[in-house]
Length: 334
Image (tube, rainbow, N blue to C red; front, side, top):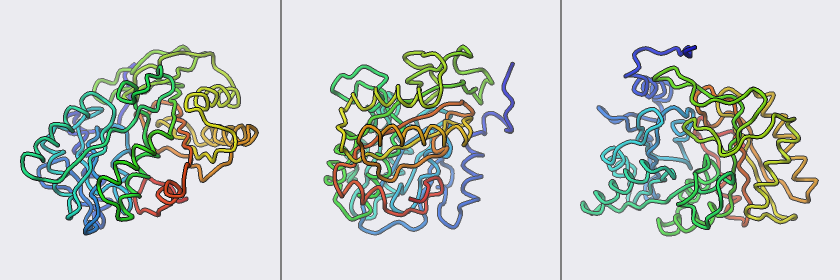
């Protein structure tokens, strides 16, 4: 059975999504005419500009993370597809107010290729632009010691803290160094409960028996690396936390924050129950809790699932960057 989607022409899904969002946020953001690039109306002079090139289909991520102490410009690709190098190049130029600009690169082949090509174009034209590779945090994949060889996580901790650190006035080299430090302190896992459907074809993205969950589900709707039997929220939280805590490893006494993210079709009831279980288990194991968040923050269409990110708040700079206020529409108040 094909999925029902309230859309117009399939070819216009991304353009109309951007148009609707810009209309709702025209006091804060604008769209570069003739492109799928959006930019903040009021950029901070002398601050490192933060850019992301990201595919559509994950809303509110990353379109909803444009704002103060967050992203300054975004080049939006097709559905689950990276934008080409030209729009990333233009977004990097638009975000530069004198301190250079930095593109946050998702750990996917197309994203890496196109971002690197855009950076080469910037170098040829004398534009001060750099990149930082996100992800490598998904503990469902075998650990290689090199995040380039691992799947990405949703990277909400990483993007919020990197952008916040830039907002504090640090140089581009300092922001990159801090970003790598943050990434090393994050571990994540995606739990698939029910698959979503493709807006382009209406087809189910993967098959999953009713009595199973899949661990390590991909950000574009791929099945996970391993299936486990359906279980209670407490049992699931205990199982995935064991994977996460052992992967870093985190040590009792560490101050941890976590994000419980719904992938589109997960009810707030389920998210809050799981959030409560994660909180309780971490406290029982002797960890301190610092400002975790819960909500539908990055989606895979209407798929039902949970992304759990855990971050060790290793120093006060990480906490400060995490806590900086933002007017980005998708980020909850802390």
